[in-house]
Image (cartoon, rainbow, N blue to C red; front, side, top):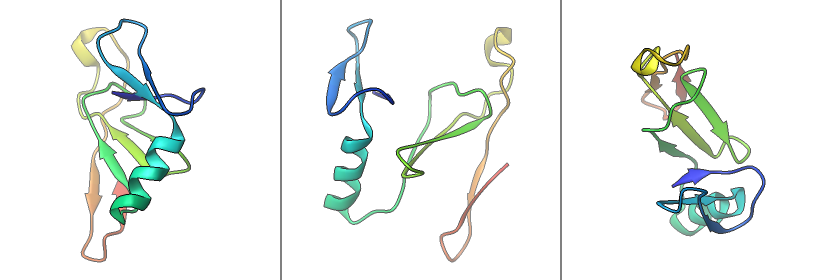
Length: 88
C-alpha cells in the first residue's frame, strides 16, 4: 500500500494490485496503537526519505540510483536512545 495526498480512507491503486491510503488512515492507526510514527520502505522516493501526514509517516528508500533508471538519493534513518529520529 502507498500513501496518497489527495484521498481519505483506503482506495485501490490505479494498477489494481494494491491500495493507497490517506492521512486520516495514518492518524487513526497511530491513535489506536498509541504510536508516534510509522516507518515504511520498499517505495522509491527521490530524496531517500519522505514524510507524509504531517510527519506521522516516513518512507525510507536506501537504494541510490535505483536500477540505474532513477537519479534518486539513498536514505538512512537512525533512532537514538531517546527515540529521536535522524535522517542521512
